[in-house]
Length: 289
Image (tube, rainbow, N blue to C red):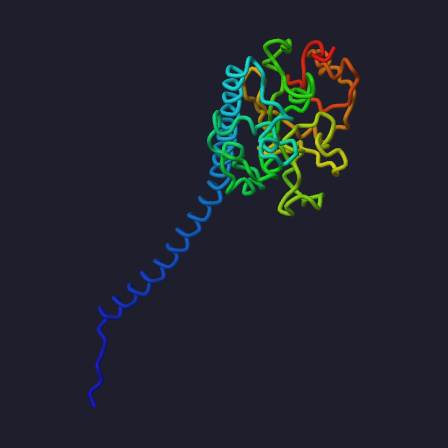
């Protein structure tokens, strides 16, 4: 039986083919390694870009809230919306509602403005419409208002036109509000997140001004990297570093805070201090004098 023979040329051709296959596998592995390295290098940059975009959207939300408050003031003889005369009261529930209740729907039409894109509990605002009929809506917002500014003067409202802080560009009006972690501490909460003091920024901790017996939830957080965004009475929005604020024990007096004209320091009342970013709960004489 005749056996086929392979020529030298055929053997060389098969050898070159095997080498090409081996080279192709090595090249593929090199390409995969390079792609993996590029992804690992780019991911932090992409993440930082996403964080910056979210923080920017949060600032825009606060600016829109500030604009709506200014428009409200124009229509209400210079007064800001009351923390005691709000939407829950209008619904006949007998409860005091959140300060933003008066802004809907005339000055703000979409409740999503009250949700920071980096708020881990922002989902709670979904499904809430401009009527704000949900009685727990004050716990859902990502932003809170300065309790002092919203409750002084006859227990109701702040009138910046008549009781003007001496440094409105440095006086806190609203800000990102936590807590951003943990579970609810009250059985009355919806069980899907922490309570938020009826959307009020407590200067000395986390009490709810409308339910003093409720367990406190400190609201200061680090939602945007190392801090939060704050809105001033003048309408400006600033980035505020809160890492050190969270770690620092509350004091009734801070040298830097007092030198900025902080009313709370003058009265020796314990409070969070944001003087590092030149922001204060109130500046100038107390409006209740």
